[in-house]
Length: 322
Image (tube, rainbow, N blue to C red; front, side):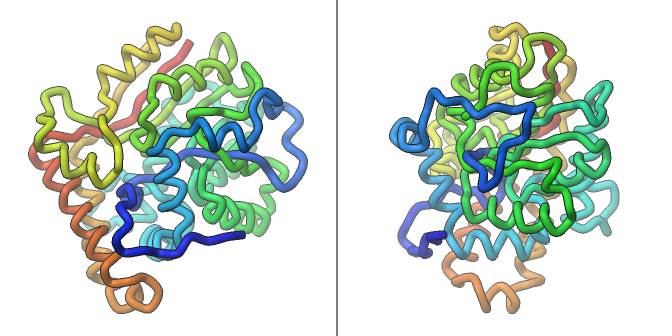
């Protein structure tokens, strides 16, 4: 597997702060209930993917990014956590986010077919598979992260429940109505084609009774484009999503808004904790991660923290159903 080398002058998206949800093809037979679409080849997807997706793939496949995420988050999760106390670790808070999201889904059972968009290292998929015995398809654009996902999933003997697919969520390689639940954590901001993402979600979800549960760092209702500029520049995106945008788009595809549980304070707290963790692991990180990469990440984290403190950013758990 080819790994991308870190080049200090390259402008990567600030993926370090969020967990991407994308995916592709698998190294073993796909689960019976889910069928890959024959309508688009990998080559075609590469040609039609947005520049933001290409940037994210390059970034997440880089060795420094892989080592950084693994060290700070612990190799399971790469998403914003929910903190109940000052002593909660990043890993504990990240697990709590998964639990709170799962609790919003009615009748979650072993029969629920889940698609995790931007699955990262697969921590959420393994948690759901352990908890409910359900089958989960992990869609993720980083082949490096996907390989880690497969290794850990096999080690935990969950490969009969979890499939890992290389690809991106702008072009889902699945047939219509393949899933009962679409799940994603802090990934959609990496797409510059969010309307297409919602359309694809609608296509692969069952026509009736399907749920969509996700989190995504967004622009606040009264956000200033000027203040959001530095964050968008680091993410290599032109716009953020918003609560109003997602509600409008999902309604347009026949969904009802079940709930939105806002946790802007947790976004700011989480990135503050990540920044603190970097300082605490400075010496260990220096062995594997270039110093200029770390400084780039720290600058980006500060932008996120200020954006949250100034109420320019929003974050929370979305739930839609049809």
